[in-house]
Image (cartoon, rainbow, N blue to C red):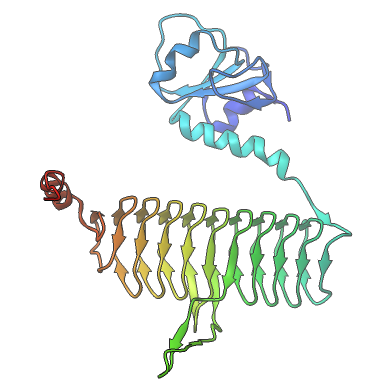
Length: 327
């Protein structure tokens, strides 16, 4: 796709300085761009590249100031990094314009497929499933029975969405993730033999959620495992049965939430962190990477360590920890 400087400035609601007719076909890093590229500058340590970048257009903050004349056309915006993100969406749209159902897919006649849905080769859509407008189902995807997938949601290759799950609008489920897998439920009898507890609930993922590759979200024993609006899950995250994740919470890679725990809104969980079962984590909580949470956490708290406790207290204690020896 070809975009002029004028069109990009209008799209970004920016102020244009230079030739409005300059055209680009791609977006690139400032140090790697060519004459067909638009680039951006949001980090001052890259300012040196402004003088020698080969990009034809550069997006900068409104307060960007440089004494020397530079070659690229300038588009000034409120936040250059957000401008970069918007341009990524713009250029990526051309790759997402797909519709139609592959002859190599297997779609149940009882499923309800809306307009402009794309279903790739070797994907299976089981009975009584509803795909809303502009859903993209890529190759080798399995969608179970009685599943609902909202408008503009993208399901990447290799994903499994099992029976009765509900996916909202504008979601992205990345490759090889499993939604609605059987929750880890076993009860020991008097002989110590573990008996399987049937997991008959489902998973509900609400609007604008992103699920990373190889992430698993288990169905509830009863009721629903719920991922609320705006949640972002990184790759290889484990969400156990009956967990509830609050709005706009982000969880980094290789983290795990044990069964029936509730995570509040706007929380941040660092990589390889873990939360034990049946806990309540308040809103705006930050859990540092590799932390192990074993108790409830009040809102607006930052914790770290294993077991995790208040980060300020941890830092004070660490002064003593590092001086301990093994005598």
